[in-house]
Image (cartoon, rainbow, N blue to C red; front, top):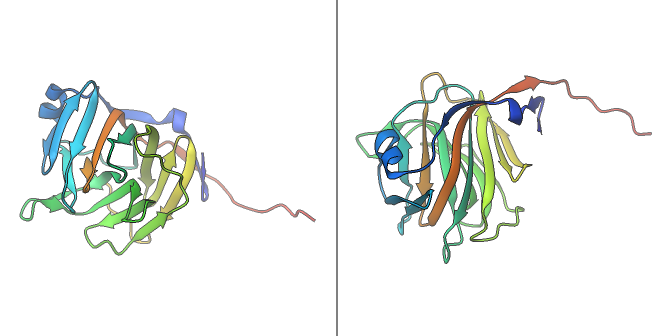
Length: 207
């Protein structure tokens, strides 16, 4: 998978975490911070009717250049917002997400694939061109390499962004799932160390 000046080796990524969703797994590995979250037939299901990020976050930190690899869909009649975070942290005083990268499908109020940087949300990128179908299961791979953020859906690079002030991924390592006025579910979830190499970019004359 080719990014700007990088080649991702998706098959060569080291798996840092992979565990089937179960109620025991949620109790041991995650913290519900807001919304309703439960496990049903091997799926993590999230539900939140309000306009804020209702999250379930990892108890452990996963530092470095990481990628979240999962399958997800909205639960009908819900039509929007499948969101995740990584390189993250939590503000215990306000019980809200603090520093983190966030990526999602069919969000940002107008049906976009997007990336944002919490908590100031001054760094944003969004693409309205992805043809999202509510209720359809998508394979999502999203993460970052020292602030070079990417979103891959069903094997296609849909969005990338380079952060001029990258999150310190040696300090911030929480990951999480988010329901933003949405009803959604996740399965087949892994956290991976991104395998990549730097590449030179150059055009060859076409005329």
